[in-house]
Structures are given as C-alpha cells and as structure tokens.
Image (cartoon, rainbow, N blue to C red; front, top):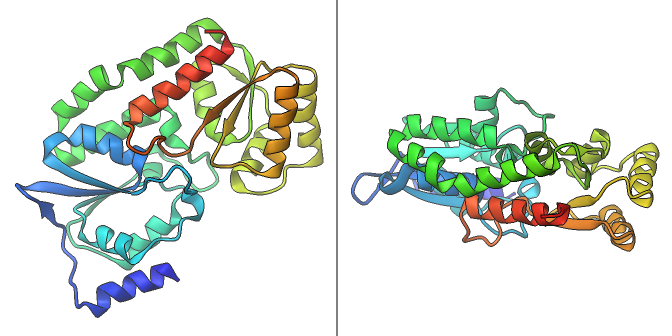
Length: 283
C-alpha cells in the first residue's frame, strides 16, 4: 500500500522527476541501506550528498514498507544503491515505479553476479565490499577517495579480520543465520551450523527437525566455542538456542544487520563487531 501511495504522491503533484544535485554540484545519492550509504559517503567525499533509507537498527530491511518520502528520494536521486538478490525488493519496486532519465543505479547483487536465493548479506564480505567501492568510485569519479578509504578508513576492519584468521582459523563456531557466513569464510573459522539451518532462519522459515537436532547437539556437546547471533532476526527458535548456549558457557556474540548505532561509520561498526568476536574466541 505504501508503494502505491508513494507513486500517487509523485503523480498527483505533477512532478517529472529528474536527477538532482545538492548545492555546489554534489550528486544526490540514495542508498536503500545505511551500510552502503556510509561507504558511498566516504568514497564520494565532498562530491556527494548521501541519504540512506534504512537507518534504524530495529528495522528489518527484508520487510520494510516504503513511504511516499522514500519514493520522492528515489525519484530525485542521481545515483541509487540497492543491495538486490531479493533482500530489498521494495527498493527495486520504487525504482521501477519512478523511472528517471540519466539516473545511475548500482545493484550490488548484479555487480557481484549474484541472484535471489544466494546469501544476500554482501556487506559482510570484505572482498565484495572492495568490489562495490571500486564501482562506486568509477560511477562517481572519485578514485582518490576510494584509495584513501581502502588504505586508511578500512585499515582497522581489515586488521581485525586478519587477526581472527591468524589466531583462530579452523576454530569451530556456530551462528543463528546466514549473515555470518561471509565472515566465517574470510577468517577461515569453521562454521559448523548446517547451511540449511542458517538459510531457514534468515528466510523466516522453520528449520527441519534434523537440522534443529544437529544444532542443539553442537551446543550440548560444546562442539562450538562461540555462537554468533543476529539481533535483528530473533525468533523463539533462536532465543531457545541462545539460552542453551549460555547455559553451557558458550560465548554469544551479537551482530546486527544494519549499522548500530545508526550514526556509526561502516568500518567502525564492523570493526567493533569483529573485536567482540575476537575477544569471545580468546582475544
């Protein structure tokens, strides 16, 4: 319904959307989610003005209901960033409902060759983030900004990933859903939770009885030393797992799907979470 209202507002006002610049020639950038918005702001520097739609850590981007104001932002943007792969289908619909000549769109899933059904949490992969930075720099003409961001802005983030890999590669860990899979891959942690269980929780479906039994056995036997929990996807099933893990003395590491606090930078948010993981593993 909100999508219909948004389109109606634009039509009723007689608007013919055109890509807009803000102030002294800045490109108006709109990101569906604040993690991509934070990266775009730092890559683009003073050549861009960035607005992110999803900024509340308590908001589930999968189920977000866009507003008329969101539609106006999309319609007037010169550059739009969406995650894709079905993660933010509402943003794709807004783009289709508000076509604008000359507007550039970065759909991250398309850049990475991913499709719906693949793990859509691309911002949790340092390698994928690097590819996105490269495309943003190319699209916005800010190669120098991208170089500085990679070498300085992301240093602590990359260093912490490296420290986990160096100290704990091969360590068995568990997770409540698929958002953590890319981090486990990058750090070579052994994520033993069944992929089908991770995907079921991520997609809001019930895990199979066999997968539930496997995960509960991994906790009961203390096969894992850490359980990583996405606090923005907390179901009764997940809460039950957390209680069992804590009862066994297994460390629970909390991560979020979007930036927390909302005003943090991408790298500060990610580095803080990774340091929490590093400490839980043993420091």
